[in-house]
Image 1 (cartoon, rainbow, N blue to C red):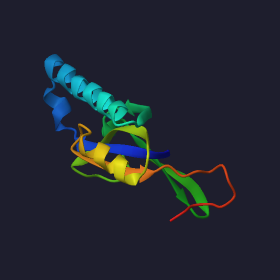
Image 2 (tube, rainbow, N blue to C red):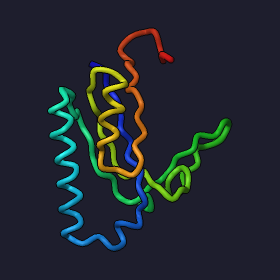
Image 3 (cartoon, rainbow, N blue to C red):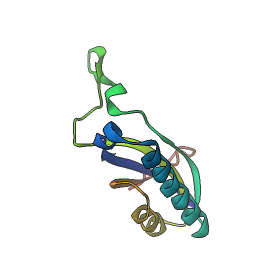
Length: 123
């Protein structure tokens, strides 16, 4: 089984008007997603919701100078990274099928790099 990171990107405007009922409904959708992953024979190895992008700090490495720390995310977009899952799936095809049912506006799927060996990045 391979591991895949699902990066969840959504508009943060939702947080401006979210009600307790809206929040509970969103959590139910993520619970249903977790059940679907298990039913498919895959596993969620980890995941968390993230605070709003306005709470982010970015550290940029600069050659010959001290790293620069700025407030906010690395890039400004309409969608922000709002959370993630680490999924163990048979292969990329299964990971992509699971991403299609993940309750998020946009899901970036990336293989987790195996850093245990000496061969370095693959692909």
